[in-house]
Length: 579
Ligand SMILES: Nc1ncnc2c1ncn2[C@@H]1O[C@H](COP(=O)(O)OP(=O)(O)OP(=O)(O)O)[C@@H](O)[C@H]1O
Image (cartoon, rainbow, N blue to C red; front, side):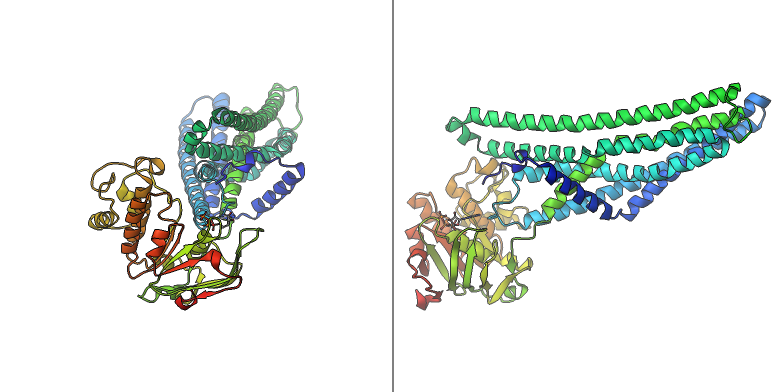
C-alpha cells in the first residue's frame, strides 16, 4: 500500500486555495451553532456585561470617598461589588462548562461520522487515507475542534455585543471618550481580517503536513526491516528530513500569523485605552473641557469611563487569542468532514439473505467489474456456488481471484450485474454481514494475546476460544492458555500460525455460514498447508466455502475446482453441471 500522504508534496495553486477559502467560508456560514453552545455563549456575554454595574459601584464608591469622606454607605458599595463579582464568576463558569460540553459532543459526532465512513471504506480501495494520516486526523487534529467551538464561538458573540453596549454607556457620559473607542475599535477587525486572510490556509497546510508526516513515519516504521535490508536507510532519512522541514516551515508560518495578530490587537487596544486616559486626565485637570455634553465629569464618572475602556477592548483581545483556535479548529473540522464524506464502498447482504438457517448459495450474475478506470477484471461473468458447496478458484496470479472474493464479500461493488447471496442482492444491511467470514491474503495480527486476536473484543466464552484454538492447532501459541503476548504485526508467531489465527477469528463466529478465504496456504510448506487445509475444512463443514488458491493440494479437497483462466470467453458457470 502506498501510504505516503500526498498532501505533503501537493503544491496548492493560489486558485485552488481561493476556491477552498470560499467553500470554507460558505460552510462556516451554514454550520448551525448547537443550542447549548449558544446558551453557554450568552451566559459568558452576560458575565462580561456584569462588569458594567461592578465598575459603576467601584468608580462611584471611590468618587464618594474622595468627595464626602468615609461613611456607612461604602459598605453597601463594597457588598454590591463583592456580590456581583461572585455572580459574575458563577455565570462565567456555567457558561464555559456549557460551551465545553457542547464542543465535546459536537466533536464526538464529527468523529463518529468520520470513523463510520472510514470503517465502510473497502480494504481494496487504494485511495483510502493512510493509517497514520487517518489516526492523526482522528486523534490529534480533531482535538483542535474543542478549543475552537468552546472558545471562539462565545468570544465572537461577546465581540458583537459587549463593546457596543460599553460604548453606548460611555457615550452617555462623554461623547469624546466614546468616539476615541469607536475610532480605535474598527481598526482591529480590519487588521485582523487582513492577517486572518491566510491564517486558515496556513493552518490547514500545517495540519496536512502533520498528517502526511505521521502517515510517512508509520509506514516507514512498519517497513524498517525492509528499508534496512535493502540499504535504503539514508534515502529514507533524507525523505524524512524533507518532510520534517516542510512541517517546520508550515508551523512557523502559522506561528508568525498568530504572533502578528496578537501584536496588532494589543497595540490598538493599548492605544485606545491610552487615548481615553489622556482625554480623561486632561478633562479632569480642566485642560479639555469639551466632550461631556457641556458638563464636567466628576471623579466617579471619569473613573467609571476609565474602568470601562479596557473592558471595551477585552472581547477584541480575547478574539485575537482565539483567532488561531478558529483557524486550526476549522481545519480540523474540514479534515474530519473530508474523512466522513466518502460514501461507503463496502456493501453487505440484504436483510432477506440472513433469514434462512441453511448455508446460502452464492451467485455472480453477469458481473462486470474494473478498478477505477482500468481494464475490466471481469466482464459479464456468471458463477453459481451451491449452498454448502466448497469451491476452489484457481488461476495464475493477477487473474482476479481475490477480486472475485472481494465482490462476494461486498468489499467492492460490480459495475454491472449482481452478486446474490441466497438469492438476495448485496445491500446495506450490516447485520447480515455477520454470516460472512472473509479471510484476506494478509490478515492483520494485532499486538496482544492470541485470545484477543481470535475474539477481537467480541463476546465469547473462554472455553469456546480455547476449543476453537485447539481445533485450529493453536493451543501452543502465546496468549491462548497463558499470558504471553504476540508482537506487532504477528512478530513471534509463524506465518502458518498467523493464518490459523485468522481462521479461528471466523470459526468463533457461530453465525458464519459463508467462508471466503484468499490463499490461506500461500507461502507455506506442504505439511503446514495440509494442516491449514484440515482446519479450514473442519471449520467449513456444512457451510458454503469459496477459496482462492494456487495450491493444487487444497483445491483437490474441494467439491469443485474452477480454473478461471480456462474459461472460454463468455462461458458461464452456473452450478456443478457447468464445470
Ligand atoms: N485495490 C486495487 N486497486 C486497483 N487494482 C487492483 C486492486 N487489487 C487488485 N488490482 C488489480 O486487479 C487485478 C486482479 O487482481 P487480484 O488480486 O484479484 O488477482 P489474484 O488472481 O488474486 O492474484 P494473486 O494470485 O497474485 O493474489 C490485477 O491486475 C491487480 O493489479
